[in-house]
Image 1 (spheres, protein in one colour):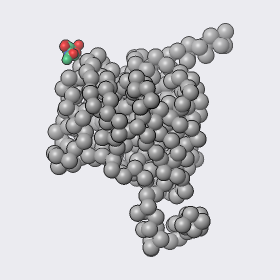
Image 2: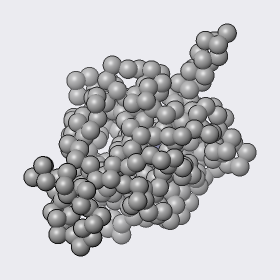
Image 3: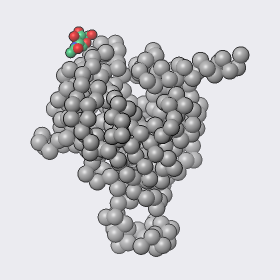
Length: 304
Ligand SMILES: *[C@@H]1O[C@H](CO)[C@@H](O)[C@H](O)[C@H]1NC(C)=O
Ligand SMILES: [Zn+2]
């Protein structure tokens, strides 16, 4: 009997993960307070606010983004909750994956999706010192050798790379075009389109060396506590026009998606690691607030 219950929970989880299905949403009647699974009263939930007192410098190796320069064909769709890019599993040997950067396994890119809000001061799921960016991109990677269904049951089954989207006034230097060009084709729930010659590294900032790392969860039901989070410190650019197009995307209720981000969750004693870039490292050495970084410097002395 018990195993039957587990099986049901498992199946519900997989269906919701895979298709964005289920009857949850972001409105008062179906919003985060009503979400099932691990979403209520659990201790390692996401997203979180990255606050200085909770952050430790960490000597992690850099994170490698493999096959992110490969140009391939992806499916881009509106699942009623967000826009999702997928189909990387059909790229064979060229499927993008991440490794190193303190990860104990190799993680293959499964899909990416976006979170945004109705105006510029909200939208990202994570916050830095209480401040939100207008949108956040999530690249969802699954531990090599596991299915998505298996991955959500492991504490390190999934590795999500979060990239903040910062609003820019520059309409040209904008690599978001690779997806924003087709926002109009996926305005309604169930719409699907294809993007050829998609390069995943268009969605990465120029510098990926500095990142935050913590152990958390999926930010949508079933909120499985299976995610090793990497939040890149450097954002990528999105123009106000692209933000406008994003806010015009309609959800499962055929209304403009004004909110598809989960509220901040309690840290519950977790620590956040910060892996600085080389530039940060030289700045730390001349920093005035040495007392703050002395423990880190002692560690780094070995490193230099
Ligand atoms: C998108 O979905 C809407 C609503 O189902 C439909 O009317 C429309 O034809 C679709 N557009 C495309 C490009 O598939
Ligand atoms: Zn997400």
